[in-house]
Each structure stands twice: as C-alpha cells, then as structure tokens.
Image: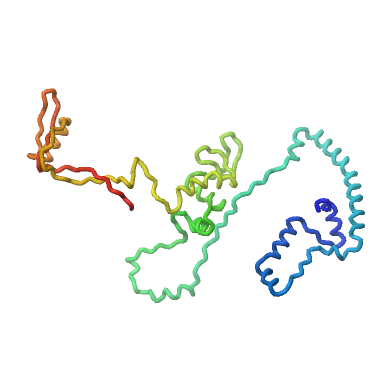
Length: 302
C-alpha cells in the first residue's frame, strides 16, 4: 500500500478516510479489547475500516488521474527548489547548510509534583472524641507531608513496588539526591553555555535520556532494603569477641617493652613477675590465678 500514500491526500478530498499503518494497527488492536471480545461471544461485530471507499464511484479512475497531476506539479517545482537552494547557498555561504541540518530531539524527564490532597473537616470529625484524652503539652507532634525510607520518597517506593524498576524521572531524582549528578545553569569548562544535568565528578553534561542507563545500577545497589556492606575485613561468620579466663598454671616468660612490663605488674600485682635481662630486655611472667582476655569467633546473624 506504500505506492498509494502519495495519492491519499487527494483521495480524501472526495470524502474518503484513509489510515496510516499505525492508525490501522490501532483500529485492529481496539477490536481485540476484552470488552469488544465479550460482545463477540453474544453477537458478531461488523467493523467497517474501508473509510468509505466503497461509496466512491470510479475510485480507480480517480487515483489514475491524481498520479499524473502530482507528478506534473513535482516536475515543475523541482527546478524551482534547486534554483532557490543554489541562490540561498550563494548568499549565505557555509551558513546555508546549518539551516538545513536536522536537530535530534531527545526525550526529557517529565516531573510532576502534585500538592498532596488535604483532609476535609468532615473526615477529621472522628478525632474530636480524643479531645482532652491526652495532655498535648507532653506529646511530640510531627506535622508535614512526605515519606523518607529506603527508596527515598513515596513516588520512588511505588515505582519499585509496582514495576520493579525506576522510571526516568525516578532515576534522575535518586541520582540527584545520591550525589551522582547536579543541575548546572552556567558555562561548562569549554566555555559553552549549558542548562541541565552534569556528572558530579567529571562535570560533563549528561542528557536526561542517558541518566538511567548510566547510574541506575549504582542506585539500585545502594538503595532499598539491603544487607550492610562489609568493610575493614569484617566477616559476620567470624565475628571476634573476647572472653576473660583465669590461668590454671604459670605461663612461660614473654619479652615486652619496659613500659609494658610496668603496666602488666600494676594490673596483676603478685600474679605477675617482671624483670630486666642482661641485654636490657624486659620479661613478664603471668602466674597461676592471673586473668587474661582470649579472643573467640562466633557466627553473627543480626
């Protein structure tokens, strides 16, 4: 049917309705709606998608006359357009090509922050019975709107609960709050003006459409209900605790610093002996009854 696209506009002048491929697909999908499907279980549905072509006499003859007319107009306009293009290029030089360049329009986020619905006085009448039940001077009252949780706001929490992923708007909001991006309304490093999002580390501009693909994985990893990240070699399956035990016999002497030897003696008194060696070293000997702390490992699951 692509061959008839060029005559569609002229044919519609004769009272005919034509449909593009997308429009026809939409019409057919509409007939597959569950509501219409339930009607077909009772009686057939007659769907006329011809656009009234059956009511136009000699449609084939009309389209045959239209084609030569369109070709004749195109043949006359082609040299005129070429002449105008050459004249424009001669007058404007290299700037002429810039006018004819296409501009890629990229999708932008469509934020909508509606004011929350307020309770009417009628809905609050049930709380009147609580009057004088408690002393308000001793009660902490928090007033405001909003939600703060593992997924930031109620909007983003609903996105994850309902769809399991962030929308473009939700991803931009999270990336901004987590410090991955910031909004800039000034000149970039190269001097070009910019109004929009830039990467917080590099300062390079980031289009709205690219933010989700660039930052979403990091956002998901560091948001929501999750296990805490391990750091400094911490292993919950080998958590160290110390237990105090009492020695049942004397230990072998240990070489320590002089200051440390005095500290051990100060703590353990008669249950600890210290002395200086011939080479200036200091030794400590823990005797029976001394109390020491011994490390032990347990599995930590909280």
